[in-house]
Figure 1: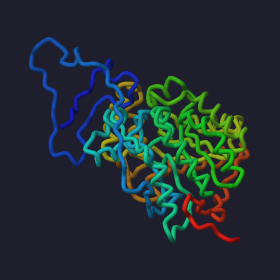
Figure 2 (figure 1 turned 180 degrees about the horizontal axis):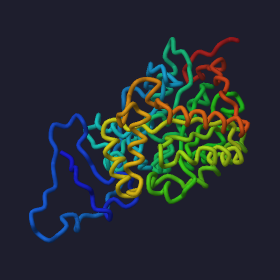
Figure 3 (figure 1 turned 135 degrees about the vertical axis):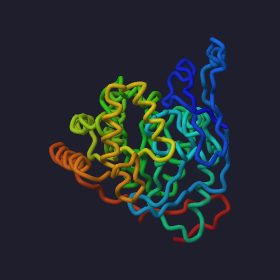
Figure 4 (figure 1 turned 90 degrees about the vertical axis):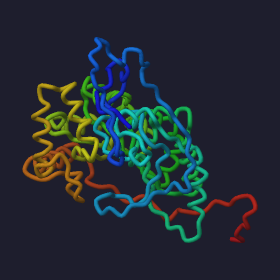
Length: 362
């Protein structure tokens, strides 16, 4: 059972969500009720801390057939994300664990330390056909807990040993730790990185992405990766109508100056429990424009807060969405960004020899 009521600010300091709503699979909801005593029932409760439990899945490669997604397989070293981005479309996935998409998603995490070993096992399977593995498609693989668990480092070591292509999306500075591996992969045409920059306003960033490095620091990530020969695109994601849409051109030009060679965008997506979480965020942090923002959100999603239809969910529809798309195309052209990138190489894939394997004569 999960509370719908807002958690006291002192308990959720540094967190993105303000509530812990019931997930859509839960038949029970617990409501906080004022019993008349002049006392906040949360006064004696400590601040929420991050909890991490370990999980050993049977396999780590997840496959999808969505026609509007550029990859067909991904690996997620973590479930839940401490970055706490209030707009994160992946929040409802915590419901499959029996947890809330709200504060549970950013405080009750799951780590998969066996992921590198399991990945190597799956790549060795007879008949495996290599295609780009996406890392960061659901939750950020370089969120703060990676500093302790180092799962991403192990995954990249496996992919390099197999000469396997990999695409990474992140907001985390911990990716700089792995530049040595990434530069080796990049030199072989096996990787590119997307760095998400949602806004250049540090105050807005801190409010809606509380544990994410500030925008200037993320531009520095782009600079360091590009300087090491890693191809980087800036991801203006999500574009939130009426909140950060005015920054499209500035974000792209700042990323170009930092060394990015391309850019992409995604319209705000508010599936399932994310919509009420985002409305709460607007009321608390942007009360003067909360109604205007939500009106624009409904406008680009056919009158609804979210439309899950393929190709519409990430771009929206209607005149306002078309205007965003046109502005983005023009901004890319002015920045000299390429419209697309060549596919990462799959022809270099090979299964490394292990102890006990029979080596080839040639």
